[in-house]
Amino acid sequence: MTDSGERATLSRIADDAEVSLSTVSKVLNGRSGVGEATRARVEALLHEHGYNRRGTAQSSSLIEVVFGQLGTEWTLEIIRGVERVAKENGLSVVVTESGDRHAPAADWIEGALERRPVGVVLVLSGLPEESRRQLRVRNIPFVIIDPAGDPPPDVPAIGAANWSGGTLAARHLLELGHTRVAVIAGPDDMLMSRARLSGFRSALDAGGVAVPPEYLRSGDFDLASGLAEGLALLSLPEPPTAIFAESDLQALGVYEAARAKGVVIPDELSVVGFDDLPVAAWVGPPLTTVRQPTADMAEQATRLALRLRGAATHDHLRIDLATQLVVRGSTAVPRA
Image (cartoon, rainbow, N blue to C red):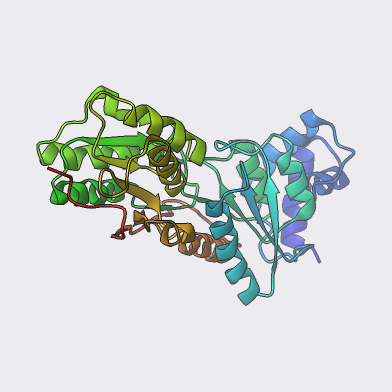
Protein backbone atom coordinates (compact mmCIF):
# COMPACT_ATOMS: atom_id res chain seq x y z
CA MET A 1 0.00 0.00 0.00
CA THR A 2 1.14 3.53 -0.72
CA ASP A 3 1.07 5.71 2.42
CA SER A 4 -0.20 9.31 2.36
CA GLY A 5 3.29 10.82 2.50
CA GLU A 6 4.48 8.75 -0.44
CA ARG A 7 1.36 9.57 -2.44
CA ALA A 8 1.83 13.28 -1.73
CA THR A 9 5.43 13.08 -3.00
CA LEU A 10 4.33 11.30 -6.16
CA SER A 11 1.52 13.80 -6.70
CA ARG A 12 3.98 16.68 -6.44
CA ILE A 13 6.32 14.98 -8.92
CA ALA A 14 3.38 14.47 -11.29
CA ASP A 15 2.50 18.18 -11.02
CA ASP A 16 6.10 19.28 -11.60
CA ALA A 17 6.44 16.97 -14.60
CA GLU A 18 3.00 18.01 -15.91
CA VAL A 19 1.86 14.39 -16.20
CA SER A 20 -0.70 12.22 -14.48
CA LEU A 21 -0.06 10.24 -11.30
CA SER A 22 -0.56 7.04 -13.31
CA THR A 23 2.27 8.10 -15.65
CA VAL A 24 4.58 8.56 -12.67
CA SER A 25 3.54 5.12 -11.47
CA LYS A 26 4.35 3.61 -14.87
CA VAL A 27 7.82 5.16 -14.82
CA LEU A 28 8.42 4.04 -11.26
CA ASN A 29 7.43 0.47 -12.02
CA GLY A 30 9.27 0.27 -15.34
CA ARG A 31 6.13 -0.20 -17.42
CA SER A 32 5.76 0.76 -21.06
CA GLY A 33 3.50 3.42 -22.52
CA VAL A 34 5.61 6.44 -21.58
CA GLY A 35 7.63 8.48 -24.07
CA GLU A 36 11.39 8.66 -23.59
CA ALA A 37 11.44 12.42 -22.94
CA THR A 38 8.63 12.13 -20.37
CA ARG A 39 10.27 9.12 -18.72
CA ALA A 40 13.58 11.00 -18.41
CA ARG A 41 11.82 14.06 -16.94
CA VAL A 42 9.97 11.99 -14.35
CA GLU A 43 13.12 10.00 -13.46
CA ALA A 44 15.03 13.24 -12.91
CA LEU A 45 12.30 14.59 -10.62
CA LEU A 46 12.11 11.35 -8.63
CA HIS A 47 15.85 11.63 -8.05
CA GLU A 48 15.67 15.36 -7.30
CA HIS A 49 12.99 14.77 -4.64
CA GLY A 50 15.08 11.98 -3.13
CA TYR A 51 12.31 9.51 -3.74
CA ASN A 52 13.21 5.95 -2.78
CA ARG A 53 10.71 3.15 -2.36
CA ARG A 54 12.11 1.91 0.94
CA GLY A 55 10.37 -1.06 2.41
CA THR A 56 8.27 -1.83 -0.63
CA ALA A 57 7.95 -5.44 -1.70
CA GLN A 58 9.92 -6.59 -4.69
CA SER A 59 8.23 -8.62 -7.39
CA SER A 60 11.04 -11.18 -7.37
CA SER A 61 13.41 -12.92 -4.99
CA LEU A 62 16.39 -12.63 -7.32
CA ILE A 63 19.98 -11.51 -7.02
CA GLU A 64 21.23 -10.52 -10.46
CA VAL A 65 24.89 -10.92 -11.48
CA VAL A 66 25.97 -9.00 -14.56
CA PHE A 67 29.12 -9.89 -16.52
CA GLY A 68 30.58 -8.26 -19.58
CA GLN A 69 31.78 -11.70 -20.61
CA LEU A 70 31.12 -15.20 -19.30
CA GLY A 71 32.97 -18.45 -19.78
CA THR A 72 36.09 -18.41 -17.60
CA GLU A 73 36.92 -20.15 -14.33
CA TRP A 74 37.12 -16.70 -12.73
CA THR A 75 33.47 -15.96 -13.57
CA LEU A 76 32.46 -19.33 -12.11
CA GLU A 77 34.15 -18.41 -8.82
CA ILE A 78 32.14 -15.17 -8.75
CA ILE A 79 28.89 -17.05 -9.34
CA ARG A 80 29.74 -19.57 -6.61
CA GLY A 81 30.28 -16.75 -4.11
CA VAL A 82 26.99 -15.04 -4.99
CA GLU A 83 25.15 -18.37 -4.87
CA ARG A 84 26.31 -19.07 -1.31
CA VAL A 85 24.86 -15.82 0.04
CA ALA A 86 21.70 -16.13 -2.05
CA LYS A 87 21.08 -19.60 -0.65
CA GLU A 88 21.49 -18.34 2.92
CA ASN A 89 18.80 -15.74 2.26
CA GLY A 90 16.35 -17.89 0.34
CA LEU A 91 17.06 -16.10 -2.92
CA SER A 92 17.73 -17.27 -6.47
CA VAL A 93 20.49 -16.04 -8.79
CA VAL A 94 20.03 -14.84 -12.36
CA VAL A 95 23.19 -14.41 -14.44
CA THR A 96 23.26 -11.84 -17.24
CA GLU A 97 25.91 -11.30 -19.91
CA SER A 98 25.64 -7.75 -21.21
CA GLY A 99 27.87 -5.06 -22.65
CA ASP A 100 31.62 -5.21 -22.08
CA ARG A 101 34.04 -4.91 -19.17
CA HIS A 102 33.23 -1.21 -18.82
CA ALA A 103 29.42 -1.16 -18.57
CA PRO A 104 26.32 -3.21 -19.41
CA ALA A 105 24.57 -2.67 -22.74
CA ALA A 106 22.13 0.23 -22.91
CA ASP A 107 19.08 -2.04 -22.92
CA TRP A 108 20.11 -3.97 -19.78
CA ILE A 109 18.47 -1.49 -17.40
CA GLU A 110 15.03 -2.03 -18.95
CA GLY A 111 15.20 -5.77 -18.29
CA ALA A 112 16.54 -5.21 -14.78
CA LEU A 113 13.65 -2.90 -13.90
CA GLU A 114 11.19 -5.52 -15.14
CA ARG A 115 12.90 -8.31 -13.15
CA ARG A 116 13.11 -6.08 -10.03
CA PRO A 117 15.91 -8.03 -8.30
CA VAL A 118 16.54 -7.44 -4.61
CA GLY A 119 20.10 -6.50 -5.54
CA VAL A 120 22.54 -6.39 -8.45
CA VAL A 121 26.20 -7.45 -8.48
CA LEU A 122 28.08 -6.07 -11.49
CA VAL A 123 31.43 -7.52 -12.57
CA LEU A 124 32.16 -4.38 -14.58
CA SER A 125 34.01 -1.11 -14.15
CA GLY A 126 30.96 1.11 -13.92
CA LEU A 127 27.32 1.89 -14.46
CA PRO A 128 25.92 4.95 -16.31
CA GLU A 129 24.62 7.68 -14.05
CA GLU A 130 21.10 7.38 -15.45
CA SER A 131 21.04 3.64 -14.69
CA ARG A 132 22.29 4.26 -11.14
CA ARG A 133 19.50 6.77 -10.60
CA GLN A 134 16.83 4.43 -11.97
CA LEU A 135 17.94 1.59 -9.70
CA ARG A 136 18.13 3.78 -6.60
CA VAL A 137 14.70 5.29 -7.11
CA ARG A 138 13.31 1.74 -7.08
CA ASN A 139 15.40 0.69 -4.08
CA ILE A 140 17.43 -1.84 -6.10
CA PRO A 141 20.94 -1.67 -4.61
CA PHE A 142 23.99 -2.50 -6.69
CA VAL A 143 27.65 -3.29 -5.98
CA ILE A 144 30.56 -3.53 -8.42
CA ILE A 145 33.17 -6.30 -8.07
CA ASP A 146 36.85 -5.60 -8.79
CA PRO A 147 36.20 -2.57 -10.96
CA ALA A 148 38.29 -2.21 -14.09
CA GLY A 149 38.07 1.56 -13.72
CA ASP A 150 37.78 4.01 -10.82
CA PRO A 151 34.10 4.22 -9.82
CA PRO A 152 32.66 7.41 -8.29
CA PRO A 153 32.51 7.62 -4.47
CA ASP A 154 28.77 6.90 -4.45
CA VAL A 155 29.22 3.55 -6.25
CA PRO A 156 29.73 0.65 -3.80
CA ALA A 157 32.62 -1.57 -4.90
CA ILE A 158 34.50 -4.62 -3.70
CA GLY A 159 38.03 -5.19 -4.99
CA ALA A 160 41.35 -6.81 -4.18
CA ALA A 161 44.67 -5.30 -3.09
CA ASN A 162 46.08 -5.51 -6.61
CA TRP A 163 49.10 -3.24 -6.05
CA SER A 164 50.18 -5.28 -3.04
CA GLY A 165 49.68 -8.48 -5.02
CA GLY A 166 52.06 -7.22 -7.70
CA THR A 167 54.72 -6.43 -5.10
CA LEU A 168 54.38 -9.92 -3.60
CA ALA A 169 55.05 -11.52 -6.97
CA ALA A 170 58.11 -9.35 -7.63
CA ARG A 171 59.62 -9.85 -4.18
CA HIS A 172 59.30 -13.60 -4.51
CA LEU A 173 61.20 -13.63 -7.80
CA LEU A 174 63.83 -11.26 -6.42
CA GLU A 175 64.36 -13.49 -3.38
CA LEU A 176 64.94 -16.44 -5.71
CA GLY A 177 67.64 -14.41 -7.48
CA HIS A 178 65.95 -13.58 -10.79
CA THR A 179 67.14 -10.46 -12.59
CA ARG A 180 65.77 -11.14 -16.11
CA VAL A 181 62.12 -10.73 -15.20
CA ALA A 182 59.28 -10.14 -17.68
CA VAL A 183 55.63 -9.32 -17.14
CA ILE A 184 52.49 -9.99 -19.17
CA ALA A 185 50.03 -7.32 -18.06
CA GLY A 186 46.30 -7.11 -18.63
CA PRO A 187 44.48 -4.44 -20.67
CA ASP A 188 45.79 -0.91 -20.18
CA ASP A 189 42.28 0.47 -19.61
CA MET A 190 41.71 -1.68 -16.52
CA LEU A 191 42.65 -0.17 -13.16
CA MET A 192 43.40 -3.55 -11.59
CA SER A 193 45.83 -4.35 -14.42
CA ARG A 194 47.67 -1.08 -14.00
CA ALA A 195 47.77 -1.54 -10.21
CA ARG A 196 49.30 -5.03 -10.47
CA LEU A 197 51.91 -3.79 -12.92
CA SER A 198 52.69 -0.72 -10.80
CA GLY A 199 53.18 -2.79 -7.65
CA PHE A 200 55.33 -5.32 -9.52
CA ARG A 201 57.60 -2.69 -11.07
CA SER A 202 57.84 -0.75 -7.81
CA ALA A 203 59.17 -3.80 -5.97
CA LEU A 204 61.61 -4.59 -8.80
CA ASP A 205 62.86 -1.00 -8.79
CA ALA A 206 63.42 -1.20 -5.05
CA GLY A 207 65.45 -4.37 -5.66
CA GLY A 208 67.56 -2.70 -8.35
CA VAL A 209 66.07 -4.72 -11.23
CA ALA A 210 64.77 -2.96 -14.32
CA VAL A 211 62.21 -4.28 -16.78
CA PRO A 212 63.49 -3.61 -20.32
CA PRO A 213 60.84 -2.61 -22.88
CA GLU A 214 60.99 -5.97 -24.66
CA TYR A 215 60.14 -7.72 -21.36
CA LEU A 216 56.96 -5.69 -20.87
CA ARG A 217 54.00 -7.24 -22.71
CA SER A 218 50.24 -6.83 -22.39
CA GLY A 219 47.05 -8.51 -23.54
CA ASP A 220 43.72 -9.74 -22.26
CA PHE A 221 43.36 -11.82 -19.10
CA ASP A 222 43.08 -15.05 -21.09
CA LEU A 223 45.06 -18.10 -22.14
CA ALA A 224 45.45 -16.92 -25.73
CA SER A 225 47.24 -13.74 -24.63
CA GLY A 226 49.51 -15.70 -22.32
CA LEU A 227 50.42 -18.06 -25.15
CA ALA A 228 51.07 -15.32 -27.72
CA GLU A 229 53.06 -13.06 -25.40
CA GLY A 230 54.85 -16.01 -23.81
CA LEU A 231 56.04 -17.18 -27.24
CA ALA A 232 57.22 -13.66 -28.03
CA LEU A 233 59.21 -13.45 -24.78
CA LEU A 234 60.75 -16.90 -25.10
CA SER A 235 61.79 -16.14 -28.69
CA LEU A 236 63.95 -13.16 -27.67
CA PRO A 237 67.74 -13.46 -28.12
CA GLU A 238 68.02 -13.23 -24.33
CA PRO A 239 64.71 -14.57 -22.95
CA PRO A 240 63.64 -13.91 -19.36
CA THR A 241 64.26 -16.44 -16.61
CA ALA A 242 60.96 -15.51 -14.95
CA ILE A 243 57.55 -14.27 -16.13
CA PHE A 244 54.85 -12.67 -14.00
CA ALA A 245 51.46 -13.14 -15.68
CA GLU A 246 48.72 -10.88 -14.33
CA SER A 247 46.16 -13.70 -14.39
CA ASP A 248 46.29 -17.46 -13.92
CA LEU A 249 44.80 -17.94 -17.39
CA GLN A 250 47.66 -15.94 -18.89
CA ALA A 251 50.07 -18.06 -16.86
CA LEU A 252 48.57 -21.23 -18.34
CA GLY A 253 49.18 -19.72 -21.77
CA VAL A 254 52.83 -19.23 -20.78
CA TYR A 255 52.93 -22.93 -19.83
CA GLU A 256 51.80 -23.76 -23.38
CA ALA A 257 54.40 -21.40 -24.84
CA ALA A 258 57.16 -23.02 -22.75
CA ARG A 259 56.11 -26.47 -23.94
CA ALA A 260 56.15 -25.30 -27.54
CA LYS A 261 59.66 -23.86 -27.13
CA GLY A 262 61.01 -26.83 -25.18
CA VAL A 263 61.54 -24.73 -22.04
CA VAL A 264 61.20 -26.57 -18.72
CA ILE A 265 59.26 -24.96 -15.85
CA PRO A 266 60.68 -24.18 -13.29
CA ASP A 267 64.20 -25.38 -14.22
CA GLU A 268 64.58 -22.90 -17.09
CA LEU A 269 61.66 -20.57 -16.49
CA SER A 270 59.82 -19.50 -13.35
CA VAL A 271 56.16 -18.48 -13.74
CA VAL A 272 53.94 -16.56 -11.31
CA GLY A 273 50.23 -16.03 -11.90
CA PHE A 274 47.50 -13.99 -10.24
CA ASP A 275 44.06 -15.17 -9.00
CA ASP A 276 44.66 -18.65 -7.51
CA LEU A 277 41.90 -20.30 -9.47
CA PRO A 278 41.34 -23.98 -8.58
CA VAL A 279 43.15 -25.03 -11.78
CA ALA A 280 46.37 -23.41 -10.46
CA ALA A 281 46.85 -26.32 -8.04
CA TRP A 282 46.13 -28.97 -10.69
CA VAL A 283 48.51 -28.07 -13.51
CA GLY A 284 51.99 -29.51 -13.76
CA PRO A 285 53.95 -28.11 -12.12
CA PRO A 286 51.42 -26.50 -9.73
CA LEU A 287 51.37 -22.76 -10.29
CA THR A 288 52.86 -20.23 -7.89
CA THR A 289 50.34 -17.40 -7.85
CA VAL A 290 48.97 -14.40 -6.00
CA ARG A 291 45.67 -15.33 -4.41
CA GLN A 292 42.86 -12.86 -4.63
CA PRO A 293 39.79 -14.06 -2.73
CA THR A 294 37.48 -14.13 -5.74
CA ALA A 295 34.60 -16.07 -4.18
CA ASP A 296 34.92 -14.01 -0.96
CA MET A 297 34.74 -10.81 -3.01
CA ALA A 298 31.51 -12.08 -4.56
CA GLU A 299 30.09 -13.03 -1.16
CA GLN A 300 30.92 -9.63 0.34
CA ALA A 301 29.48 -7.82 -2.66
CA THR A 302 26.22 -9.76 -2.35
CA ARG A 303 25.96 -9.20 1.42
CA LEU A 304 26.64 -5.49 0.90
CA ALA A 305 23.94 -5.24 -1.77
CA LEU A 306 21.42 -6.80 0.62
CA ARG A 307 22.46 -4.46 3.46
CA LEU A 308 22.09 -1.41 1.23
CA ARG A 309 18.39 -1.94 0.58
CA GLY A 310 16.75 1.22 1.83
CA ALA A 311 20.03 2.90 2.81
CA ALA A 312 19.92 6.68 2.56
CA THR A 313 23.46 7.03 1.20
CA HIS A 314 26.02 4.86 -0.54
CA ASP A 315 29.08 7.08 -0.28
CA HIS A 316 32.62 5.79 0.28
CA LEU A 317 31.76 2.10 0.21
CA ARG A 318 34.95 0.78 -1.35
CA ILE A 319 36.44 -2.37 0.19
CA ASP A 320 39.69 -4.01 -0.95
CA LEU A 321 40.37 -7.53 0.29
CA ALA A 322 43.92 -8.69 1.00
CA THR A 323 45.97 -10.71 -1.49
CA GLN A 324 48.62 -13.28 -0.58
CA LEU A 325 51.36 -15.23 -2.33
CA VAL A 326 50.87 -18.98 -2.72
CA VAL A 327 54.18 -20.66 -3.52
CA ARG A 328 53.96 -23.91 -5.47
CA GLY A 329 56.15 -25.66 -7.99
CA SER A 330 56.42 -23.22 -10.89
CA THR A 331 59.16 -21.00 -9.40
CA ALA A 332 62.76 -21.84 -8.55
CA VAL A 333 66.24 -20.35 -8.33
CA PRO A 334 67.44 -19.43 -11.83
CA ARG A 335 70.14 -21.53 -13.45
CA ALA A 336 73.64 -20.15 -13.12
